[in-house]
Image 1 (tube, rainbow, N blue to C red):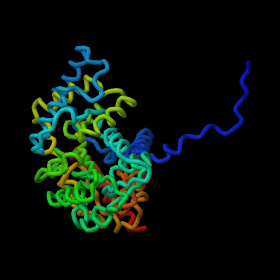
Image 2 (image 1 turned 60 degrees about the vertical axis):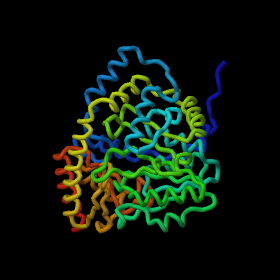
Image 3 (image 1 turned 45 degrees about the vertical axis):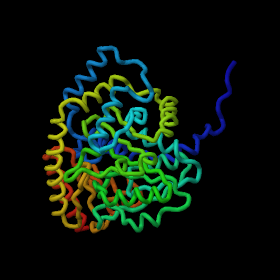
Image 4 (image 1 turned 60 degrees about the horizontal axis):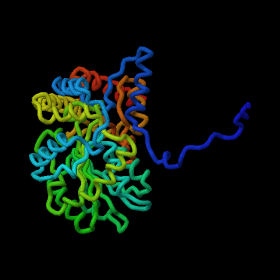
Length: 400
């Protein structure tokens, strides 16, 4: 029997999907690669990942695990041996004894952020988060039916909160505070006093706190403060971190979370219902990352500090551009308002006329207008060439 041809409009996708935003870095990457395919030279500063290779001992551990047959399903919560090592890491860095039952291993930090927010928020619940922001925060809150309540990070405070402004943003509908320190995209780091004030506010207002600390080992001065370590936050805080940045393992997709007892089962249920589990051979590579030599990670941070200083000095020498020195992560977030173009227009101009791929600040929310994000985790040669091209494009704009 011949089926009738479709004449009506195709079935529409769910409205929930419309609440999700695409990662702008990959959109810009695709455009930059299309230009390269036509023979155009592009310096890539758009993708936020280390330019270093995954250390050899970690790659070898993953290969060995595959050869040993560690390629089947495993515990949705993560290998006990890896969770034990993560518990040791939390004790060493935060001074807090955490049972392995409160630790979850996932396929990257991003899904663990998403799952925690889905497990916490109902329709109408409010989540306060830093703005500009890592886009998954807004997507997850919107997808859960929650209400977004951005609090601006102030450039004059080195991209920290004005705490009076933060406090005023809390309403009776607020259920969750989201933190990200060191911060993407600004490179800002909350001070110990900032974290103590937010912790006191969370306890006073009976709020949960989700702290994205994926850049916890990527700092240039003192170690960043972690809210998980503070008194009274043990049962109301969620820590999310991972292996992507510290160990140059972005493509391995490996992260972990520390949660209150009562939140573990719902998040594990989300993992079980979506990805089943994190591949065991990837977890074995992560175990080697934590227990093996740390020399390559330490060297990576030494090199990144040099490249940070080169990038920031060069940006501040370009008329119309000013840039604070980031204290963590590997991003420069220059103020480009004096150039006289929107962030999107300037980012497009730098790519199409200068061959420099950057992200407009508005890729991280409307509060990012007037800024660009540049990843300085690239070669010194690329940084110098990018600065030369940016200077040329900006100077030409001034003559139009």
